[in-house]
Length: 116
Image 1 (cartoon, rainbow, N blue to C red):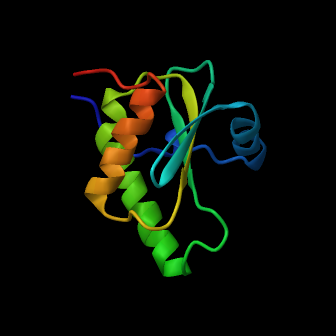
Image 2: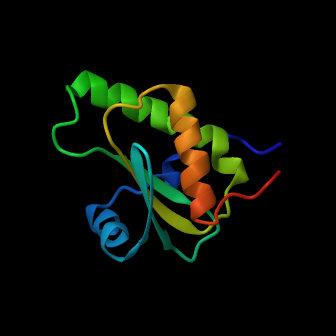
Image 3: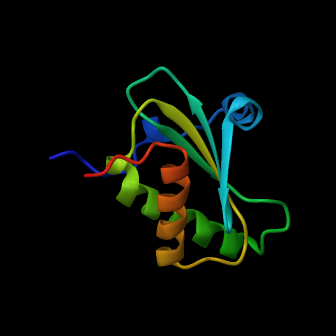
């Protein structure tokens, strides 16, 4: 059975790499979130969760980031590998079920969702 832990190698961490995904990546949006996708030529997806300026307090941002990571961890097994992903989350829709719905919509639009 595959591990569903969110590993460090799955994180998109370098600022230059993140900026490249925002500049060159294909954009998909739904109510409350945007997804930027760029092929990375590897066997795994790397992801970063970002928020616009003025997104609540640090506590709200950190809670939303934790929820975003957990929702991604739940769906990552259903995604096509080999992409850098930047997920821009807007304030408002901050429940776990809403976040899961956003991911299903965004990854479906991007053609990354593989039906189990």
